[in-house]
Length: 147
Image (cartoon, rainbow, N blue to C red; front, top):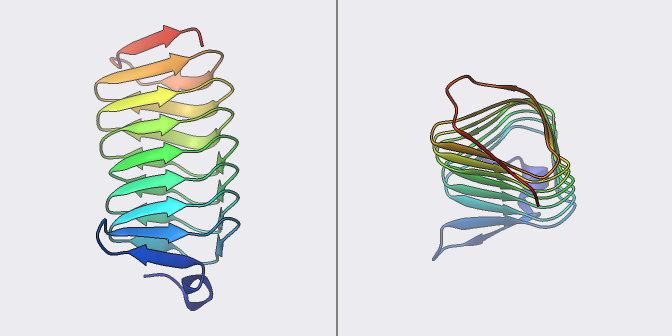
């Protein structure tokens, strides 16, 4: 599941099936979590991050690979160098940079200052404030509103 170096940086809450990574944790290898995953601020993932559940990525985190989870919340000022794929909802907070594509099986909400290469949401793509999305899949219902 998680490499040995990282295991001391993760705690497990059994009742909610949630793994919790401390702030500034770093993971050298690909991370696969079978459950929910809450990541502290400033975490660094050198590879892909796959979660079977909800992912809450702390502010200022960096993921050098792709992210995949059922529901995803990306904290402000985070940087994702790959693609982000949410089976359900994707919430992207202020000033997040996603170099690749961002796709959501249901709703996607993007807050001000974000920079995303490509966006696609099955039901609604909501752009809040000044957001830069280079390309949006045709047929995607887009709602644009000020902050």
